[in-house]
Image (cartoon, rainbow, N blue to C red; front, top):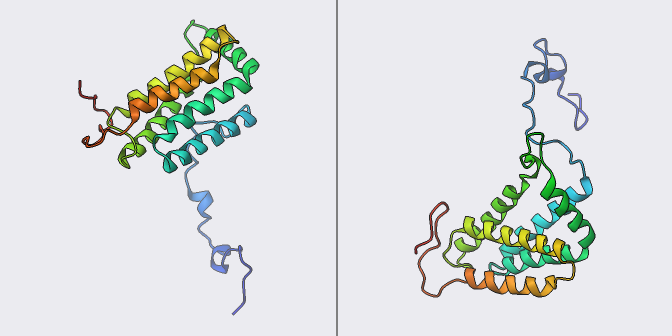
Length: 191
């Protein structure tokens, strides 16, 4: 029996009269997202931040909030000039009809990712009972506002501001001893 080299097709596939699987298969579906980012450096940086945040969430439930806020505050501080320029562009970027450009819808993706991390923390009992969606959207809104304030006042002590935000959100997310199960996705918190 002849031996074949690893990675080569078996002899029967080489001699088929019916065509190859590639010829018989339908064309691939169009991708919903571009294959490559216009800015691969920024995309890779964002990818690493998100991956780091997911890892942190697994290691320390409530520590995720401090890491999430701290990461953004540190990024704002170390990239102040670039961040302020981006805020000014973002706030004035419109399409032909004058509406905010849909290219900036990535905010919703970030809120969803943070929501999922918070839900994991709740499922593990590391976070209290609250709407993970509301908490994620609130975290993002507060950080967006901090960025706007920093753009308006570059002398703002964002480290102190970030410390206050961490304390605020950690108190809000802290597990309540003896509390019931976390709020399921889509449910409103009890009033």
